[in-house]
Image (tube, rainbow, N blue to C red; front, side, top):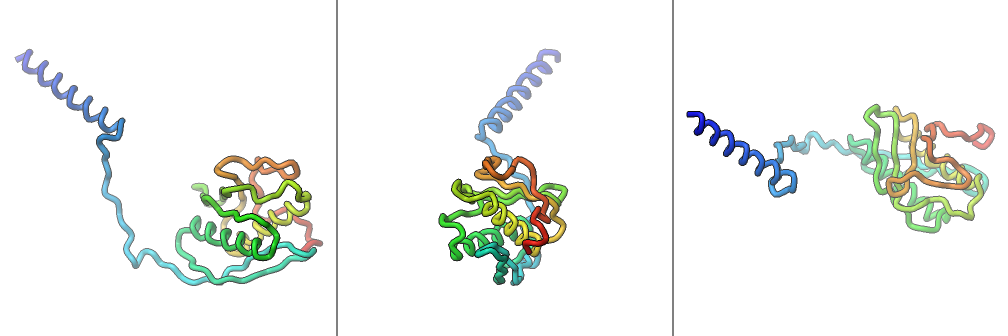
Length: 181
């Protein structure tokens, strides 16, 4: 009786060990069922968005229609990619930059934006960089609600710049003086 009980525990432990080993080294993949959204749950609408940028010593405002869904992170990523294309067309930036990813913190007030390359040229003045940043913040602010801060990243790393500090999040209201509007 004692010997059969010992053999049973040994065999069970061996089997559990093999399963855990297979799972750890991804020979065994366990996927739990997920709720797949239906077409009724994925509501996408057309929305007219406003994009702001600084050029020739004044603010410019452009409107664009885009698809707006319930996923705010995806909406902001699309919006900022449109904004970057607008800057390219306006000859404000001269390189193709895209948004790698956008994440909204669980508190839904902090936004993390990761570029694929640095949007600020080294030869730019602090004012030029600052106005680009203010245009980005104004564009986000005019099209979304409930966001308070924005942290910019390059390839998921903090941006290092000699003029502006990106180690801390920027308030969505920006820092620009009211006289520049």
